Amino acid sequence: MLTLLLAPFRVIINFTFGALATAIIGLLVILVGLPKLLLPIPVVQRGLSTFANGLFRLWGYAMSLMFRLTQPMHWHIHGDAQLHRDRWYMILCNHLSWVDILVLMHLASRNMPMPRFFLKQQLFWVPIIGLGCWTLDMPFMKRYSREQIARKPHLKGRDIATTQKKCAKFRHIPTTVINFCEGTRFTPEKHKRKNSPFKHLLPPKAGGTAFTLQTMGEQFDAILDITIVYPSNKRPAVWLLLSGQLRDIYVNVETIPMQPELIGDYFNDEEFKARFQRWLNQRWQHKDEVIEKLTSRADNPPQQ
Image (cartoon, rainbow, N blue to C red; front, top):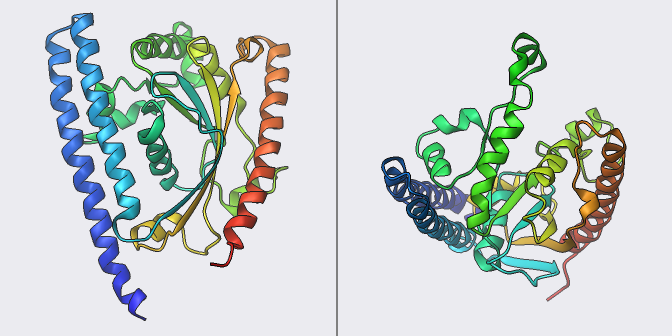
């Protein structure tokens, strides 16, 4: 009963802390970004981007602290931990909750370059977050529908060209690009609707992953296959975190060396497309097996 009474207070503490940390650090990042508009000098812009990246890492530390703020948190991190802050990585990750992003921020703040996301163009207008992400040089994707391209053929390929131009900025700052290959959060309903061949995963979308590798593949030092598992509970992970009941997080990290055969024109080379889909599905089958093992550990922890 006492735990139930304390839960609302824990939610207030965690939510307030997360919101204030995001607002304060986000505003500081935006202030760093203002001179970028006034001083379009490459050396100055790179220096400002590096400083903004340091503030972004501070936000990562704040999110790590949130995991420990109102609960005794235990991290179970398995696999390859030989990572470095001064390199470039791409992450392939399963997606269960927006808590996944905070988990990845926790990992990045320890021993990885700070992550970047490919964002929808509409997110630019979200207060604080939009301008903050722009300052951090995160690419805002503007996708054109088939109908738009049919009406205006000159738009074909523009989204790819624009993204490649924006990603060129990552050459100057070590970066981790995060790719949730499923495209959406896993739920039993989505799993059934998509008739997924995997027990714990939705089918991966190969196009986005292949596009990222085509755009930045030569910059990446490795691909990080990261798998996240939370102990089974009928309540979502975000509620468990905010209410102080998320006591264990299981993470598996595998480093995949970059291979030239993973880089190609997915949208125009049918042979490469088929080969890349096979590779990603094999990775997903392996990830499914890893989740099965981690779930067993999460649901049957060793007795103290």
